[in-house]
Each structure stands twice: as C-alpha cells, then as structure tokens.
Length: 118
Image (cartoon, rainbow, N blue to C red):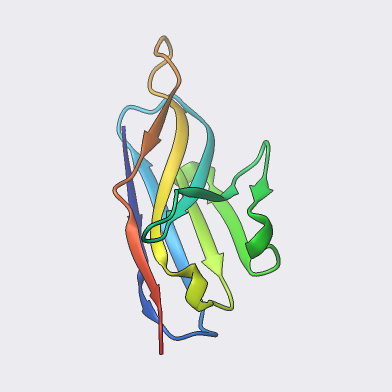
C-alpha cells in the first residue's frame, strides 16, 4: 500500500490550495484518510480526517475542507484562505485493510511541502 500526496507549493497569503492523496496497491478497504501537517520545530498535528469520524483541527475550521472519492481511493484537502502559519509539510495518513484477511494498519505518505509567503 502506498499513499502519494501532491498539490503543494509556494502560495501567497490569502490564496488557496488543493492537496490530493491517492492510495494505491493491494487495498481491500479504507476506514478513513486523514491529513496531518508538521511545521519546522513543531510536532505533527492532525488537520482533518474523513468520515466516519470527520474531524478538523480547531484552528483551521472554516478555512479547510476535506473530501474523498472512494472510487479513486483518494482524499483532498482544500485550504482557503491560506495563512503564513499554514506553512508545513502536509502528510496523508490512512487506516487501510490491505486484503480480505490482512490486518488493518496505518499508512503514511512522504508528504508535500506547502509554503505560504509573499
């Protein structure tokens, strides 16, 4: 199982960004996909998680929307408007059952850098 993020980059404050996460490989089922972020010198924190237990980081509520496409094993994170404090590496995380008789595990992508600066 692999998770691959895309969509990061350099964006001006007030702009918008849509991150994509695609899960691939031998996947039987996905319980949820989630987005985390880690800024320099800070701990990794949960930004948003897809249903069944949808959650959002309190400090991003109203600016962040998580969505998913079950047919594509994908999750998306839209941030609008972006602030300087959103600068971080954004990671995709998934709770995935790799096969009918496999064990459900957590998987991580390698991350995508988001830099908010003028």
